[in-house]
Amino acid sequence: MNDVPKIMNTVNTEDFSISRSGEIVPKQEPEILSIEDGKKYLVSTDNYFRAPDGENYCAAWGTCYLKKIDQVLGFTPIRPSTNWFLKVGSGDHYIIIAGCQIHYVMRSECPPIIKPGTYISKETGKEHPENCIYLAE
Image 1 (cartoon, rainbow, N blue to C red):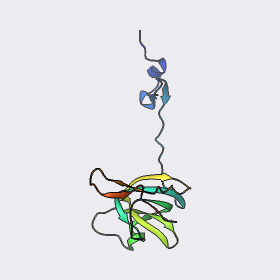
Image 2: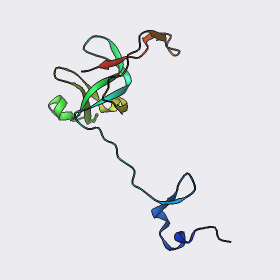
Image 3: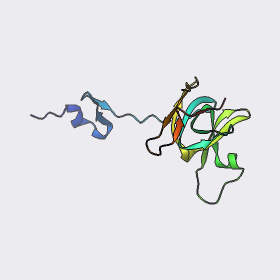
Image 4: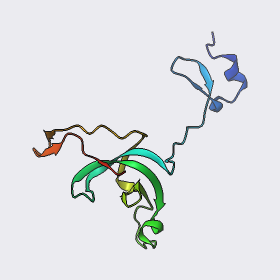
């Protein structure tokens, strides 16, 4: 009559969960993903940014390094602001993106394919490049 497996009667139920297939499995801690210094990533941003070449981009690709605010500015501001930045690129060819502006980060050793052409934004009616990714390498 009782459909609950016996294991649930003898073990703390907070230590188990039900899988998608309906099996009872031990709970696992969520995997914490982190950006590894010196690895290449494609980083999309919440807003367009102007790169050193004078063009506007909404993503950057290159070797990434996490930086704290005092490493970027040389001091810690009194007012609250983002407390970390991501340096994308190496040598003299790089940009620094505020952590609060990063939308997605994708690990990729290979540079993304830049598609030629443009499209018209449905929201603004303005013309934009097909994909506007700054290659910071």
